Length: 102
Picture (cartoon, rainbow, N blue to C red):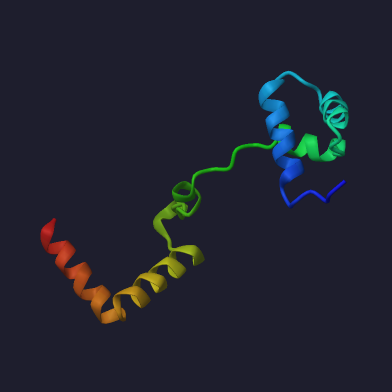
């Protein structure tokens, strides 16, 4: 029997779970074994019970710190902004323009 490509077993488990959503991990292993695909219960568990990951935009946000003080993450974000804008002088000019708009 030819060696399976990377991800083929995982896709086989996903396909089996799509057809049998109420199947237990052991029954998935048994069902795939009938088709000639060897998988372990741990692989089925990790696929069946995997929690969906959060959105990229939501996970990259920096939370505000109580009291209005700046945390390390905030300072890193400001540094990235300054680097992207070409320096601190450009950031100051942008902040001045923003304060005039308010």
